[in-house]
Amino acid sequence: MRYSRLLALAILLSLISTASAGSITGVFQGRIVQLPSAKSKSKWLYVQGKNGAIRRANIANAVVEYDDDYPASKRHKRAADSLDRAIEVRVTAEQDEAKGGEWQATNILILAPRRNSQKPSRRAPDAPSPTVAKSQVATAN
Image 1 (tube, rainbow, N blue to C red):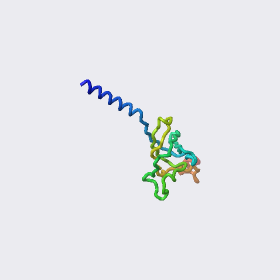
Image 2: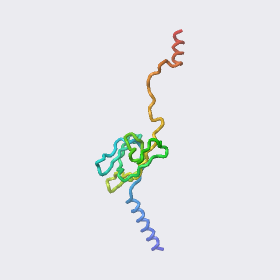
Image 3: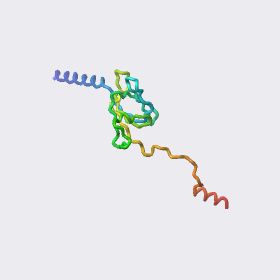
Image 4: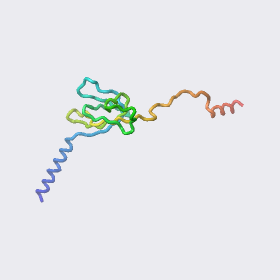
C-alpha cells in the first residue's frame, strides 16, 4: 500500500515537471504590418490585432494556408506568396522559452477579406434631408 502511494506520487511529480517544461501555444489574429526581410535567417512576421497590440512570430517553419472562404481567383499557387501588408491572418504559434519567449509560428491561416472592410464615405449629401427641409419650411411660414 505504501509502495503504491510513493509510486503514484513519483508519477504525478514527473507529469507535473514534464508539463511545465513544455511550451505555451497561442493563437492571435490581425493584419500584417511588417513582412520578413528576404535576407534574414529567421523570418519575423509582425501582426497587429484589433486592440492595437503588435506581436511578432518567426514563420520560418510555419505552414501557410488559405481560409476556406478565401476567393479562389485571388489565390497563388503557394499560399506563402499571398502574405503581404494589410492581409488579415490567424497565427498559431508556440512561445519558446528556450529562445527568450519568442513566438515560433506553426500555422498561418490567410483569412478571406471582409466584405465591409471599406469605411463608408463621409461626404455631405447633395440636397438637404427631407426632415430638415420640412422643419425649415415650417419655421419660414
